[in-house]
Image 1 (cartoon, one colour):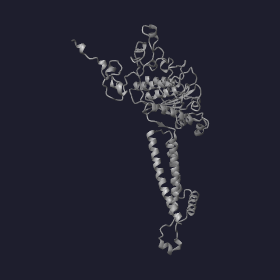
Image 2: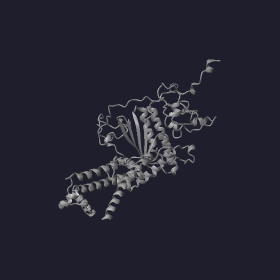
Image 3: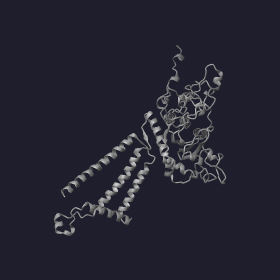
Image 4: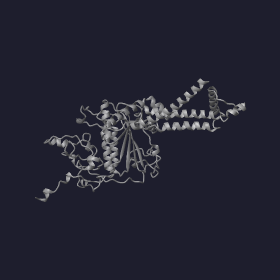
Length: 503
């Protein structure tokens, strides 16, 4: 028997790459070295999902066998082929079975480090406004190294959201949508905005994907997080033309939620970092075709590893701050309430939690009854502590050191037990004295500091989310504290009632 007959098929074996941050992204990976993608035989692609040499997506471009025209037209349009859209070669997992022209991965251009000399834009009325500014082209803010010294429209302190983008975060219009992107890296942060107005224009998510790919394909970027603030949830076949009846057989393929998931995988692969994160925060749910498509879009993003959250007032206020044309600047609570944005956020939270439950993830509560309970607990208990402190101060004014013998021998020191009306008068007297002499004693300062601390605690919960485990723990602790206080109060009232009956 020949040696070739007994030689095992290496394609059926795992590449055995060590789990690292850039797993299967170097020539040490046998699959990559042989210009093949890791497949189901590799443990990195099959179990862990941290392989950077696996197929990012699979297109649904079907090819008729023996039809040369079908083969020629397969995977020819980016809007139809997901692989072509994110500039990836088709794999054997695709519907085309690699019989198309896109079976070879596109040639990668040489990446360069971003120049550190800065731009040479001249100072005028609106410097560094256009794309010709090298810093804008590199998705960098201008700095002191630039000729403009960073005092321009592209300076970090001069970033602003255009009025038409900001208006998308105030009310939901038919076609318009706005998106703000924040890129975060080591010693690097950049923000940009995108706008979609008419059906003929690319969606804001499509504009974002093109911009990010332009960045990571040209330059070496140390990026570890992408935060997306969008006015309405990314679409999932809501805007297909013609409307698709069956999502899996859609030919228009307008699914921006899916596109964001592909972008995250592409960025991880290009940067050779499996821990790059993406967070999508949306204000309004996209309900053009009902909630089913909206939930499918959220599910698609969660399954791709994207963190999906509702856009809360904390982040929304920052978006309002970024607009220099904002009327009533600072009156954000009134604007938020007048546009009924609480209702939009609550609806978005409901959709997200339903999708998290479907995937077996823990529930998250960004806006819920538990937040109102926590806020009231902090404020009410703080008020109770102030009242108890006042009661203790009043009790300290009583001379309770006199013994029965001294009380009988010295009538001037006689105190007995003060009646409740007199105690109430003392409390009112103590409170009025404190308000008259502010700052002259420590009690008023203590009350003010307690109130400020309570307000700070309430503010610290703004934008916080609680999962179901945290919610149960908070509820149990509030019940325990309330129960203990009630027991002591009931005991005291029974004692005082008994004393009153004896009198």
